[in-house]
Image 1 (tube, rainbow, N blue to C red):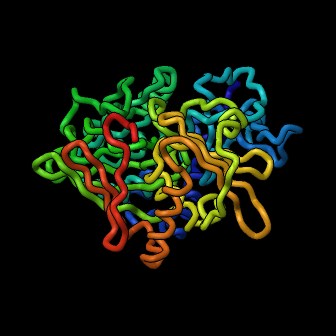
Image 2: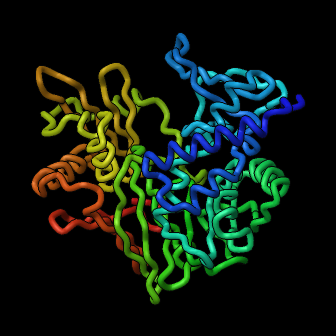
Length: 403
């Protein structure tokens, strides 16, 4: 389809409106980033994407509606300049945007991240003129273009694990005159040919800080990445790398989540009923409800990450009213069943999963319920520990990513 003659005029107007809104919301305090937002045409990076329908299907799955200029020009352009994450791929399957189909459920594996978060990441990384930057997760290329507009293409390297995604991003970038170094590569290993970097910013999440990123950062340089895990707890961390290759940094506030690096995605665990069948019949009363880490609150979001640090190989799912926990590494499992005003726990295997989480929750309460910004991450000698002055240290998964 040929775009309407006034498409670029419409897009420029919407970019101006988006930049104004982000400025009013304090996401664009730096005028150079505002100029980048006003300049980079986001719609050129998202020829097609999915938006969720208002209602789910009969099985409770999200209905994802394809949006392209051909299907609905107005909806497509308005969404492209909204502060919204636009899903561009599910389950690693590249859509046919010439004949897109509605999807029911699925796991998003690529997207154009909402602009306010992209800008927050670049701003939090403290990027300055003259810095060389490695971006992990090119995606559609929009965030890459913003970095190129701000720093110049020569100082920007961006890598993407999905070759098809990178090919499309490269086409959009080069057509617009942006020429960063691009490569198909796994973010777990960074990109040695262009190292060392002043800043590394990851647009995907990792279970632990990849050692290669420390080695590819100049002393005094910074790494901004999101840590996540199989309980879907998230925390953003800004690390400063020392001369000896160790790193330390503060956990940042906010409820930010990114798709996992594909090599760090949670494994399939089978049927939770099979795991529950092997548990002891005897139960005990839980000292904490699972809602403490599953509720839709900022505190629960933070607590889920702390709990995940205690049981890094555990996964959680709810079947009916029963909460199941499964650890595919150790073979441990637990169930939590609601009762008369309390939850009953059954646990089995070498790791008492809910008992470990209860210890973290007890320590958190005793410390006065400290926020994310009061925690620091220390990376040294192949070990990674989350620390707080009033709580026991929580070891993170190491390079091997086992418990």
